[in-house]
Length: 369
Image (cartoon, rainbow, N blue to C red; front, top):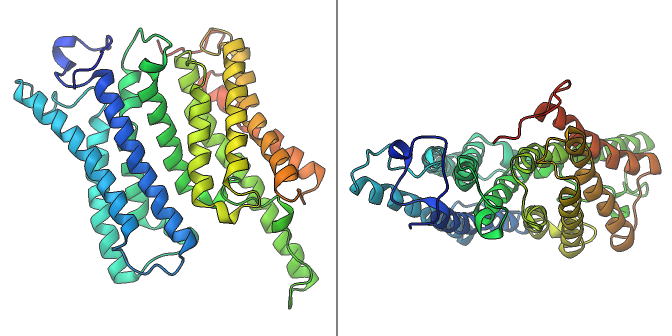
């Protein structure tokens, strides 16, 4: 696909390919979206059918079909470019070298996953996310779907338009979705620990006061950990992007809404609100974040504005989250210091990451131009 291209940092005679550019990025991002949706569909099946004891399921068929579509699109581009006289290495579209590596990792991980399951059985709960074949699969997917993001990173002079940013935004959203999937055991949108429904019941048969206290502390610690971890993942991916580009209005909304929609769909029965209120939270937080970035312009040289945005985005997201639990999830059982502190900690995690992006003493942090 001969899409629109922009200048890259390397000489065009060395790195340009016949097939590539924005058109190919968009095709690859759309196919990657189908691929990642298949992963979440398989996750939904495991959440709702815990007794799955075979590798050969309809959900795996959807997942691996999505992978084949992505692999075929990239390999076709490489083959067509090679036919134009480019070496095999130069035939890989700019930014997609790690995607090729990721596809091989996924293929190896898939074969290893089959052997693992047939030999040791099907894992459940957290163990399923931490098994070596699944971690290899997840790493492969992350490298694969982030191709359009890396391709955009190599270009300069990209106007702030939806048609030029959509492939990159989808790619970033999918990368976030994979990291969210792999860390769903500590995610407030995956299990609403703070909702009244999840409060440990003192009337449970056989539960002593000591056990109840321990259960309460574990639940609260796991819940707070989720806010910290997910804020770090979100802003660790988002900060370099909003520093690199002035995103079109709605870009952050797309990323947040896509991510929460996938995890809320997959684990909706484990939440007090169901999927729709959580998706609405992401939508509203995304709109607020887009407007904030439009006003503060973190892509400018104003370091202070970057730090404000880094704090505000997760704080807004989690503030709306607790409002949704209170209004549509049966209430919040956490104490005021606990839930308000979780909002603050999420913001602090993002704020601290801004110092990685722009160290103390740097008056004009890197803009990645």
